[in-house]
Amino acid sequence: MAESLIQNKKAYFNYEITEKFTAGIELFGFEVKNIRQKHGSLEGAYVTVRGGESFLINADIAAYQPKNAPEDFNPKRNRKLLLTKKEIKQLASVEGKKGLTVIAIAMYNAGHKLKLEIGIGRGKKEFDKRESIKKRDTDREIRRTLKNE
Image 1 (cartoon, rainbow, N blue to C red):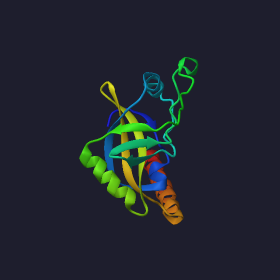
Image 2: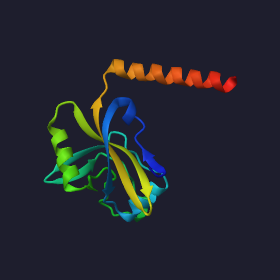
Image 3: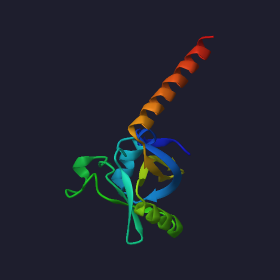
């Protein structure tokens, strides 16, 4: 994956990601400029399938220059994702299953295009989150002791 511009930092903490996809995303020019400046948020963003098309819901991407944006511009608008029919069918089948959700993980540069990494995830329970924190802390301690020796 290329340089990540925007990340959903809580994605791996709140969800157990089982499968990942890369999707193109339909944006306005002033949104692209803002993302390239690393402004925007994918926190709470998810993907839904409606009428054979997939959409990114709840991603907060403001205009690069708000005064030059159209007056009716909504930074949390639904954005169309560009996926193959096979991938859309796979995501649609996941939507029906209980406990699974499709979340936005990161947005990054791929050449001159912006791509969105999405993942199929199962929500972690509270004890799983505590386990993740313990594992992260012990790994950090091990790295510290190895670095000091």
